[in-house]
Image: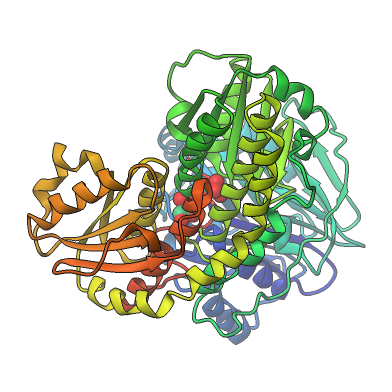
Length: 605
Ligand code: F6R
């Protein structure tokens, strides 16, 4: 993860770098720092608090300069302490910021120690700094090119050297880096968003590229050292501060934005048409015989939900895999499968690597379901369906998840229609149901006061079980993930029928058991599972559709959901689980939008 910003200009660039870091904090917030060339020397400020603290430091010390680099860190090698915060120096002559992981850093460190270099941090980044220093012969661009040949792993870097006062050199391999083109000034960043307000013209560097920014231009070479022609693109990245409005946290705001986000994501057309997924999709969708879905975390759970839809509506065999597992296992490629990657950010390293792995195995057809139109994933797939969740700031994904579900439902209905399993009346029913979803969601959001009442009790627990069945099992998984990541309560999810095969042993009166209870074909089975828990003194917290006839009783706490919403019910049932996690975390006083150890965009393995 980690966020990088760099700039070469004729004005003091520190405020641009600090503003860029503020916008990149979603990539990690363990520490941050900035370095500039001031009076021919690299000078830096670093903080193990947030960017606001770094800003105070640079104001207090009047740190300023026309050439600079900055970094916000998600710790990999070494604890989040000042010595490990970037920018990292080599012998007070050059400074570097780095995103990624250098796998051969131990070998390189020993080699550099042999040459007399001392290491003051535990980072793999310091190895790159000293390596560049060791090969520098008056040309930073050449030294960086020589250095990256020796690195194994993933990196995006930005480097400055005291002898080249108007130069920043960058390189990328496996981690994102974009060049921002200005008038008489140029920039580098992990994400175009960091530079909104400074420029709207960007060059997206490709794997293996090395670039040199000066006042009047940008030079780029590819991994073979050949001059590379990369097109500049106009990107209107919205960098304005996103307001909290009446909400306490961005997560709460984003939960309440779901009706709007979903309505923006639902296609306007009155029919499911494969061309919604891109030119050429109608033909390819006719030819495919299965789907392979690859994703991580919450996006993986939206893929798991989609499997039920794809197999039930479109009758198309669907396999869903955690991207970090798929990329390293031996699998049997099927060129007739459509590979679907799902990602909020479109930059998740494991999902990108899984996509490339699938392509290298000979999967020709790929589709991204993604919230960021300029992301690497969208650029690297044949087809794309963009969700319109808007910027998600809270680390815990909420509106991105429900909009992914909408996109995947549209995919299932489109494939179902193409394969003759969705007739005209079914199609118009699905469209009506989709269009009514925002209103249905509003009535679920109105349950917030009842959920707050439950959350007080939850905040005193250290463990929780989540149960669901069928289409709602992935929703139970997502509910457990939300609770653990922001409240730090240990939570696990099971398909309710699995309980008796082991986890029932955990059930005592101290164990809350959250149950997703839609009025679907599995309701009677689920009711039996509920009784199994009650018989053992477990405390059940059930989100039950109004017509399930599950009512409050001893050990059985019920919140009524609206009427059963058919196949789209998971989109409604996940919302109270998001609210339960959110209010429990608030009651425990955690940092809801920036939970410990996490980052919004996971761009390292
Ligand atoms: C959890 C969460 C993560 C992400 C995962 C994948 O709330 O947000 O589990 O879903 O890191 O991220 P994307 O969707 O950006 O690929």
